[in-house]
Each structure stands twice: as structure tokens, then as C-alpha cells.
Amino acid sequence: DGGITQSPKYLFRKEGQNVTLSCEQNLNHDAMYWYRQDPGQGLRLIYYSQIVNDFQKGDIAEGYSVSREKKESFPLTVTSAQKNPTAFYLCASSITGTMNTEAFFGQGTRLTVV
Amino acid sequence: RKEVEQDPGPFNVPEGATVAFNCTYSNSASQSFFWYRQDCRKEPKLLMSVYSSGNEDGRFTAQLNRASQYISLLIRDSKLSDSATYLCAVNRGDDYKLSFGAGTTVTVRA
Image (cartoon, rainbow over all chains, first blue to last red; front, side):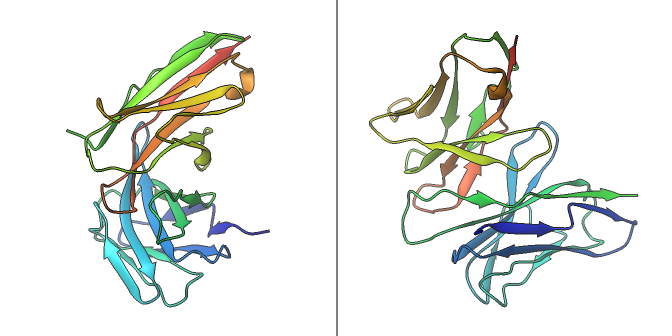
């Protein structure tokens, strides 16, 4: 089945640790995104990538890093510089080249700082 | 002003009722509009795209009002299974990236 897979589903991080969230898609989409969702808030864009080996900061990139070495993969690292990392993280992908293109989401990773 | 704003609700309606709510957007150059459904602690899933002429999918009707810069979603004959949070998404002008509203919560009661 085609889709986006995020892992792990739940992740616990100690203060000062870096953690990496995995996102893999087999939809052959060029564009991939990372969003963060806090309770009662909309999705906020962290990073996005249109093509392999290229990515751009979104609205709240501070304290996060990404890589795009393969078309299928777009991992997100939450660094110790992110002061309030507890949130629901959603990875998405879409085709590019056309405006009316929806984003497809993975199941999300719920990160908690302990 | 936020790029995309929604009435958070909650809209609490009985089964069989009609419920409607709007989403306003600030960028007049936006071209793509979507409604997503998000169940508690799950990922958003596309409910429907919103076209200029308006579109319908079963009990769901979406409308676009470019002059007033809002989109709407109407749910007819509400079912218990329609209980969810509905997110609107709008692209950022000439950019394909989507901005999302905070969502409107709908609860359908028996």
C-alpha cells in the first residue's frame, strides 16, 4: 500500500537530548513537510523540502534540523535547543508542479519530554 | 492577523441536524483550498478539496467565497461518526505550501 510511515508513534526524550523522528513515503512525491501540532492549535510548518538534497525553513524551524538524502525519506531531528518540544509531529508529502495539490499525512509521532 | 482562522466551536448537534462553519484566509492570492478531518490523536485526512464553483460529496458541501476570503463546510444529516475536528487548509498565495487553521470541533450526539 502506498502511504507515509512515521516512527515511532510515541517518543520520550530527556532534557538535553536530541531525538530523530523518521518519515518515509512510497507515494513518489517530490515535496515533504514537517508540521508540529499543539493542543488547540493548528499545524505549524517546521521544515519542507521540494527535492532531494534541498530543504527550507518553515515558520518555526529553530531547534530543529532535517535532511533529504533520498526522495522517500525526510527525517526530523529535535535538538536540545528546542525549548518546548513536547507536541504531536506530523510528516506530510505532496506532488509539486500544480497548485491544487493536497498534502497526505503520516500517522504522527507524539513526543514528550520527561 | 493569522493566515487561516476558524471558529473553534465546539458545535454540538443532534443526529440528523445540519451544521455549517467557515474558515477565513488572509492571502487574497491563495489558489488551493481543502477541508481535512482529524479524529482525536490521529493524523488529518483529506475530506474534500474546495473548488471555485463549490462542490458536494455526499452529505458534505464546500463553498468558496473569494470576495470575502472564506471557505465553508456544510454537513447535512449529521451522523455520530461525523464527530471530529475539521481543519481548513489554504495554500500560501503563489506557493504550494499549505497553512492550516486550528480546526472546528463538531460533536454529534444521539
